[in-house]
Length: 335
Image (tube, rainbow, N blue to C red; front, side):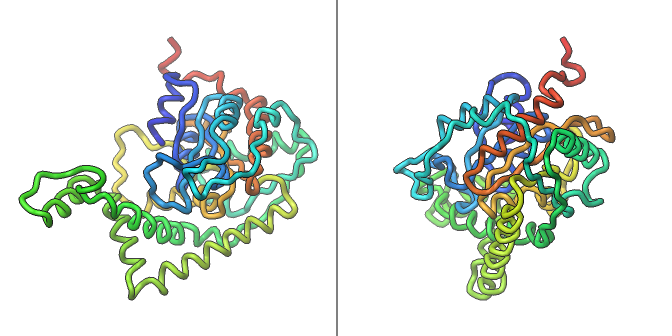
């Protein structure tokens, strides 16, 4: 959803849709200094979305102002006969959660999300917003998500397995790109070789391996069990807290034209966002300010229990009203 985030941040559009499988709305929103929300899994129909990982994918909204995303979500959320996984649960007016204070709100801060692995400038910007919530009367509780250290391998096994199955249909016959070929075997081979990029191929291969007869029990089945433990971590915290907050990413946006050639490093950048997808809970990124280390925008992540987007909007709107980040103009664009 990087294109959607850039379009919003540059002022080309008021709001844009994005798809979030492991943070693809929240990370671009964080890097571009805008608001982005991934709703509860099943809150918005996925009809028309090219599936990557069907149990993780969710359509969401990106905008400069929290209110704009609330109004768009009011329209797109709700039942759809063409998506068997969408919820028929009644959709509230999300704008009704805006403008409220946070006094008495129970805010959980996972210690795993504020570790030394998080860039200092990012951590300080997030801590400043936590103190803003505390000063306004919110109750801040340090908690633990003990299975956070397993989320990256768990996610990439599950997501890649589902991607391998979903992308099998793009064979050059029924769907997608079709290469010039002399026979049927070449149609399949060349279409998939030319039509998929390196990262997509990497995930298809990883997923095909994880689902193979010799590896299914060892990898995919174990990942599914760990996913259940991750969900239980969140359920336990939400018994005593209304929202969970922390950084969106361990660092700010990459430098222009920087070459990120290490896929494992890139995968680890998702460690703070992918848990929300595996648990199916709503999560958003709202600007926390600029990193004093890099001078780039920092995203403040807010998560709540399933179908409780209201608390996400309430906190995000409060943060937005407190720091008014939307009034800032990026350096070089003052004119």
